[in-house]
Amino acid sequence: MTHQETNTLDELHTKVIHEFSKTLEMFALTPAEARLFATLYIHDSPMTLDEMSVALGKSKTSMSTGIRTLVDLNLVERVWKKGVRKDLYKADKNLYKKFITMYIQKWIDATDRQDKSLHSLKEDIDNHSQKNEGQSEEAKEIYHKIEAMTQFHSMVYKTFKEMAPMEISKS
Image (cartoon, rainbow, N blue to C red):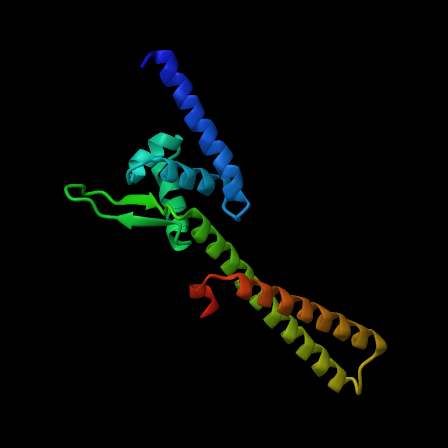
């Protein structure tokens, strides 16, 4: 392979990572996390933090932070290889299931948190009304808006629960 062919292949490799990263960012990954995942996904064998650092031109500390996030999201796993003393990481190859599961779980968690917050606000309005001997028209209006928001969150929650793979649906 000539030097020019190598440069062209390296450029293509970089473009592939860049384009794939844009898609991954839609799943709420930072650009750095998306590039790190794309690099691990494209690389055929597990990589050390040092190898990732060289491949992406970033510090080892930056790679460690990114890997920690990707491991927490179950998108990357640490693997063991005989004779290698450093930690190795590889991307899960089942992209669709991993990313859809992560994305759906984020929506379920977010709608659940918001639903709890809205219920708390309804209780605050009820307490305010009890202290002030009845609900004012303004308080009633806010209360009804919160009920509509709660219903919206419940519908979103239900929709994502129905879309969820079995392991999420059970939780």
